Image (cartoon, rainbow, N blue to C red; front, top):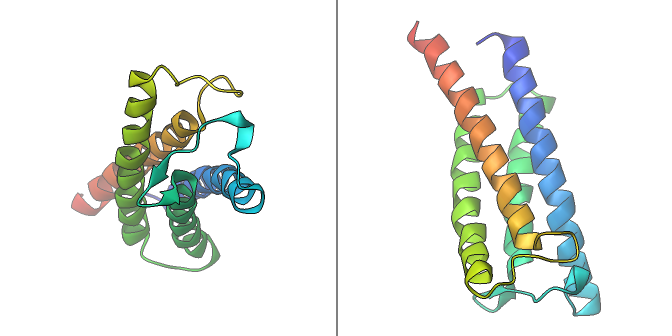
Length: 143
């Protein structure tokens, strides 16, 4: 994979991580400062803390790792693998809450879908872009 292609994948991953970070950051801030969940939704908890706080942490990890790749030379393979791992964990995490919401018929919300569904969509998008980038990077190395 050429350097320009690598950079375009990193920019895409950084953009998705930034969007997820801003979204989960807003949800986390509303919960932290008002004690209520944004958009009048029920607030799922995990191990005693709001789920959005975990989402914020996962998006922050991907934001930082991918941001470092944009700023300076780093091992792009490790960055992509980190994004694959964290986004996969995010899919499992958010997916669990989406399944619960679906079973309780609470998948819709003020924004059309619940915030957990939107979080899941961001994780899936990051996972797909990361997997495609890794596959193309691996193909280049194998040649």
